Length: 133
Length: 171
Image (cartoon, rainbow over all chains, first blue to last red):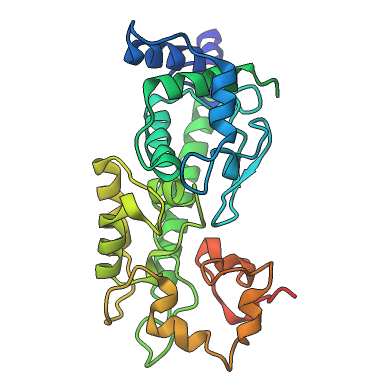
């Protein structure tokens, strides 16, 4: 009887709790590793400038994510709502390495017409981690 | 005694849940075939067996357009060019792209006609939305903005329902 209750409790616990593969800080650490020892330290100020500035084309990160990464964004073309980007406002952000890679690839291509450097990604995430939701 | 009852109850609940899921899937499947073969008849309900990856990935940027909105060759083209998808990079890992592509092609419309990336370029779309049906001015309204925005006038578009009776054209 007791064992049944314990099992049911464990199983329902597994069902309701979101399981994140990594934390944003761990993701940042792997970007740091990718950047190697030659890189300068990551800077939130540089990340903020990167986030809000158009990079050659007619788009910046904030074109869709707005100037406030803790706010709900809007797809510049389709108008679809985009959940907040800052981990403080959206616990799912930067917890799945495959998803992070997928979106850096897509969005860097759209905004900069190239892949982002580890330095840019590190500055960017360092900035997002300073945002309080 | 209590323990046995609980076990029986759990088993019943699980089999009931499985039963309901199977019935719903079959019902959806039947529904999807409705009106498939009529002359010039456009399917207004494009329900397909759900594919959670298709739903999740396509709906990240726009509604997950129902597979029945394009023919198989069109979907093959769409999925082969995701890195330049309407001027955006929508690329996916190969395994995921293959699964979604197979799902779309297996549930595509049976219509012949040139492959196209744009649903709004298909003959049936043009026929249903020509100048007599929809005044050109409607497309320019802020709430409509683009023919890609199905849900502006078809509130059930996300569920593959384009039934005439459900249409609500915004002012």
